[in-house]
Length: 439
Image (cartoon, rainbow, N blue to C red; front, side, top):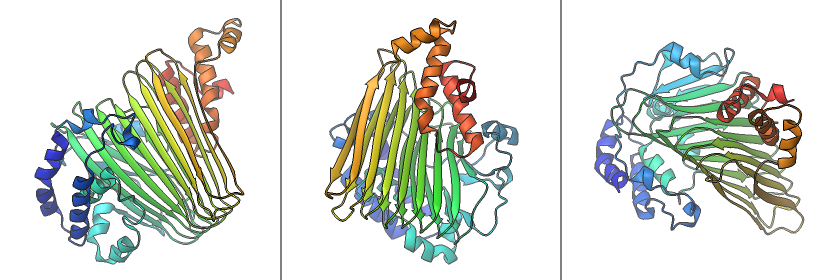
């Protein structure tokens, strides 16, 4: 496989580019584990419905050119109408302060590479880095071996960050297919509050493969929300792993909005480590052509009196494909657990398909757990109702699909993001309307 050969040929050269050395042993061990595990294939149960051959047989440049011609105006076009937000801009793997806007204080916000080079943060990295990422997954090991781009954010005790932070990862001016390993680390200490928006953008015709790992730590009475806005070009691939560990009385949300990208795989793991925890996972996918989006989620209920909610909606056109595999694990000690899991899908064309597999593994006897999935088409009676009142077929379809997706939008409390998702949904449906037009 071309990707494996790239990795074998570039690791030594990659280590030589690093200024920091304290992760060298970890990197080498992770690379060794990666080669032991091998790249996933359709023979692996977790990748039964997702063929990665299109990604793994391409050659990639592991050393992207830093030079770029991205302007402030181009960055502005990517915004969500978020003049009052803060934002961080990475271009070709490097943080660009001149394109970023950071006004918040009382927090530790650093580029991942800088944090690795700062001896003052070694203890923090020893405490958090790579402690909840699953070391039995090939791509998380590959990320640990190669990561140096991304950001580290630590919100101190009882600090509330009022402004959402939007993180842009941009690739531009690359002549070859390019491989990025992004690594994010978020620590929300006791009583703190933070919201992050993450988006990736490929400005070139060459392919970009992004292998991303994010570790989120939410402490007692803290609230951490992470919104993934996936609307990249059809020359982009995304392999995303997010791990969230929560302490008692905390709330963590991960929303995943998948509209663009040739092949996107989202892996999401929540780990409960205290009582009265709330976890929310919501997703909206609307894709067409021959795109593929795969959501794999897992919630590990290890403690009593906790709740988790998974709500994923999929709309598939043309020859696109969707995959959903949601897991809920309830340990014997985790009594009074409330776990909800739902995946609903609509196929708009005969060539579209979806494979969905909700799973529960329950070892406690005093729990309330439910799961379900549906795959179908738009209700013909509802379509007839709209058409009989002079509404065009396209607008009637759009109104029904807006309604279908609405409950996965309910917990977005960032209004510009909600408006952006609404516009993207309308754009994908080919209509000029929004949620406000429907409700």
